[in-house]
Image (tube, rainbow, N blue to C red; front, side, top):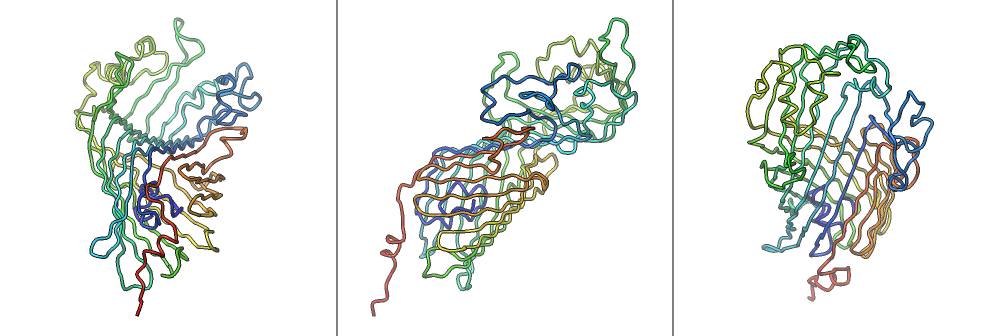
Length: 457
């Protein structure tokens, strides 16, 4: 988002950045960005690129096979709380262009995206007992939690222009208006602490697992999916719709005689909006009977066919009626709203140092959540190529290093490159992005100089 030549690719991160692109046209063919960070599970002594070379086995503490002593083991951190953040963003065919309307410069763009996000923050990690293969405590209070996930498509219109024409600084206002197409979503919320109790298994039950019972619960579960459980296939169709808005304001300190600015400050509010899933299923479990969760043959002997089937089984256990938990159709999911602040300072020609702060600010109920970011990077930006190195503090606790390269029509990089390339003792996070694009009408300082009007008197 700091590269002046990134064009429409940066519009989805800062609506004003495309205005600074020297090229009058900019076309993205395809780009992808994937991010994962969690402190629940990891793979021992592996890099992301090395995962396909050797098989991965699940830890077995009883046989002393754990991630602490064996490579290539899927193991668990087993902390009191667990966190997971996932984000994938595919930018499809998109373009931006410069237009002069009444002698005023505007930049307009259209973009298409496929987005997925999942978030589970500070979830009480009751599963740590099973992961460690140790007996659950006889009495346990599971604290309230919430988990959200959503897949959706996005069609957006980007526009930016300069405001306050008589100011010494350049003030740029930008916005993205977005039509949201909901595909899949789930929202699970436990509104109060749940009482878990454990007892010894009966004679005919699994002797290695205690019987676990849940009581005093108030849990809401909403979902909709395009996955067809009967055909075991994904059937694409629109399940929800909504609107989204991104707003950006940028102040640029630039000498009119120079091609590059001296400094830039940008403030953006991203992903204001929500998606309404009118046909989504809502279940609520509150003030029901004590539910037998572990070792219950009614749950464990039934093959999992669909979320609805499992929720009906739970409803049967809680109320003696498989349809009692169903409370209606329709729910809303908020977009991953965030504040994005950027400051860029030119060090010398083509050399810039950039600082970025992204803070999630969920506005609507049931919003999916992105990660918080503090980032500093140094970049060299030229017409045919650009590159840079960066350091990132994700969630204000995970220090990560990366970089990027823009070489003609190709852009690739990572904000967390080490897990991709080098073996990590505990591989639990990663990020990468790439883009393929082209510039129909390449521009450069000489062409811009020739277009300038001269005062010949």
